[in-house]
Length: 339
Image (tube, one colour):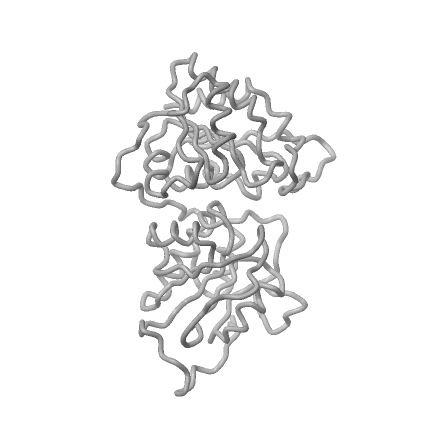
């Protein structure tokens, strides 16, 4: 199957300080988005062992990718929300290969094409007819979507190859239930008073509980801790992101992770930690953990609703399906998942 190509760089083009050919991967999104393409990054590493793998992503995500060893270097990007960056600060000769793991439309295609890569891997789109990739499918799980793209171009990628290594450092709360009440959008945030009610029930059941918070989520986490009967010492993070190695150590040694449809859910999957994940506007069929006894999803759609995206994943208020999940359901799910 063909790959969009251009001629090799000419003799007048600048030579990079690192003489290895470079593979540029565009995935300028969040932590969960990064972890869903772990199989793709591994596949690219295997198929192009002599190349430097560069990930174009926001700083906080690029740092994580480098820490896991999935990529060699990060190229920081800036964009609002999930938008395609307006430009990339790429220097030196064009990439040997550019891989669009960001989207399926002209903005990401054209952003990479401006760098004049020798080869481009991307989904086809009517507005970029020179991109000869496969057809995009709206009903596909995110892990399978990007692995299918690579396979179309002859690069074997297994969507089940999701694991990352746990760090060597010690957990600050070994054996605790980790509760993460935050999410990027309000539509995916279960109400804090319900999280607090779950925390109280877990404590009555004899469980140790810690609350995690990303940058800007400190007030939310402290509220859940206070109303759940915990001290502020039970809150990890909030002023900024928890350093990735520390977060991995905490999640890897947790009894269970309770989280909404956000990045920490994918981290629990990657580390093999039991999880209970609350879904609202988007079906777990598209973003949920792989089917495994360790992972339980709670989702309450109704007949007649869109089976894939019944709500707005980026709205400000909790989604109706998320609000149908009860405190009792969550407590039962978490306690049944504590080994």
